[in-house]
Length: 380
Image (cartoon, rainbow, N blue to C red; front, side, top):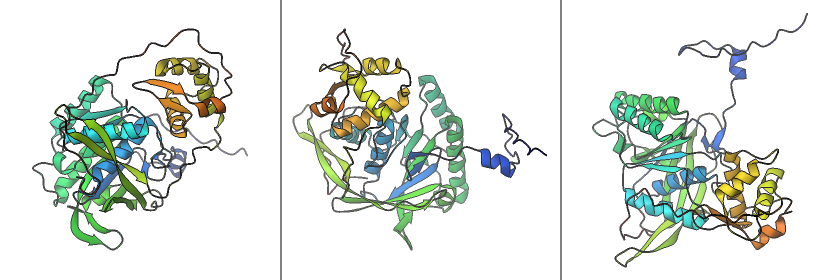
C-alpha cells in the first residue's frame, strides 16, 4: 500500500485553527534577523539602567539590519527598519551619523518616527500602521525607544495594562509581518543570573521571545541574553564605545557621538568570496576606476543570469565595503579599491557611459545641537 501523501496546508486558517503534528512540521522554520540573537517576527525587549548604552546597542542592531552589515561579526538578514524615537531625536541623529561615518555606509532603509506611538490607544496604533502603508514602508523590524514613552498614562506594574501593550504590539507584528524590539528600563530587583531585571510587571517577560540586558562599566558595554524562547541563549557580547568626531555645528563647537566595537573580535575580512559575492565585485570592476552609482551597479548585476536579488545585493555590497574591496563614496556612489581590483576577475566588460551622480539627500531628522556624547558619560 502506497504511503499517504502529506496534505497541503489550508490557504487560510482561522484564529483558533487546530494544527495537526504533520502541519506543524510543515510550517516554515524560524529564521533570524541577526543570527542567534534576534529572530524574525519576534517580540523582544532590550533593557538596562539609564546611561548604560541601551540606545547605542539598539541603533547598532537596527542599522546593521537596515544596511545588511554583519552585526559585530554576526550574519544579518537585510531589511527595512522603523525606529520609533520617543526620546532625544537630535541625539539619535548624531548616533546614526556616527555609525554611518564609522562604517562608510548610508542607511537608506532606516526610517525614524519622531512621535511616540501610545500602544494603549488603538487610534495611535491605527495611525502608525496607516502612515507606514501610505509611505510604502514595509519594515522587518520596528524599534520602540523607549517603552515608557509609548506607555504614557498606563501602569507598568499592572499585568492588565502590560497585557494591552503586548496585544497592540502583536497586532503591529501581525499586520506588518515584522519583529518588534522595545527598549526598556531596568528595576532595582536582581535576577539570579544577570543582575537587575526589567522594570514593571512580569507579564512583559512572559510575552517576550527574547530578553536582552545592557550594562556598562567604563567604556565597555555588555549585551547579555536573559531569555531566548526558541533557541539557546547567546553568549554575552562585550562592546567598547569609541568616540566619532562629527565636525562642528553651525555655531562652531565640536560635535561627536559614539559607536560600538566588539572587544577581541577580529573580522574575517579576507575570507574567500562565494560565487554571488564575487559576481557583485566583478560587475563593479567592469566599470573601471570611475565612481559608480548604486543604480548602475545593481542594474548591470540583475541583468545577468543567476544574479543575486536586490536585497542580497546590498548585503554583499556591505561585505565588500567591510573587506576594503569597495569604497562607499558619498550618497549612493561606490568605487573599486586597489585590493578590490586585485581580487576581481573583471569578467564583465566596462560600461561605455559615465555615471550621473545624485545630490546628497537632506536628512529627515532635525539638526542636532552641539552637545557631545562621551564614552564615559553617554546617555542611554
